[in-house]
Length: 364
Image 1 (cartoon, rainbow, N blue to C red):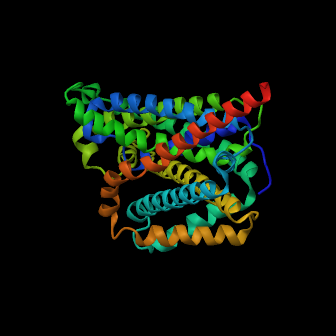
Image 2 (cartoon, one colour):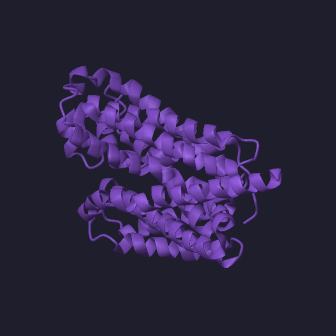
Image 3 (tube, rainbow, N blue to C red):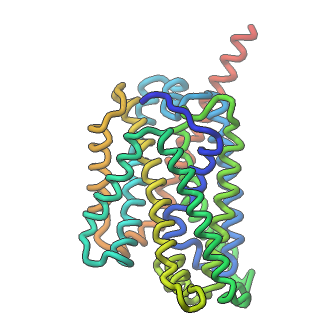
């Protein structure tokens, strides 16, 4: 793949939309009611600390992606093993997000449409994004985030007349173990998933500050996530929020303008779709860059089609139904730790040692 470059603002917007993706679609921390803001902020702080390690890797090896760094630090054999593992994670995460959004579309709008058709349509769009290249994709993201933020602000303004502040209460009523469990889920899903941006690090310009990219992206993404949750909570209330499979969609269904314009949830539908396409596309970029490194080849449409086919099959057959998909979140929070934390920490420690040895040798 040619070394296309993206700007710092484009990279930040990618992180914001990536965080906004399926975490808002499926709801965030609804088991802790008005205390969810504590879990969101704590998870964001933990995500920011982890992001400092990711940014440090980029700073140590500028204009190199995660797969390049792994091979530079540990050699070809261990580097290729790490590449295969991270490729698998990117493919699996793409399949999970694809299933999340296909289930959503199938349930709320296209009940009679076979789910496989919806999946193929989404993969057709994301595949085209990947074939077009990271620069084209980054420009598209800049358009998408403007639409997402405008719709969010629009729904917040419309919800003012339906606001009941009492729905935020009571606060600080849950024990620490419950809040801690919610924090862990939010930290793993979605904050720690930003590990996949390391695979796109070769597209970041050397002069751009990776710390600013990660921290600004997480900060602004957290504001959008927290704002969305608070909007849903003050409109629906905690009992209704817990009973909703897609709380953001349900909250906007009751909004209207002077009892004339309704069906505002259509805008939320497109918000979700744009965020989902962004997240799946980034996962595909990550997996295809790994395939390039593994097989020493360059990106082509055949490779994109092959990996998209793997994602499609995995997404279609890994769960029997919607409820099985939801229950997998409890497993995912432990399964993903290996890819999000353990492998990056292993590579980071190796990178620091190599960097220290190289500096010492150059001084001598």
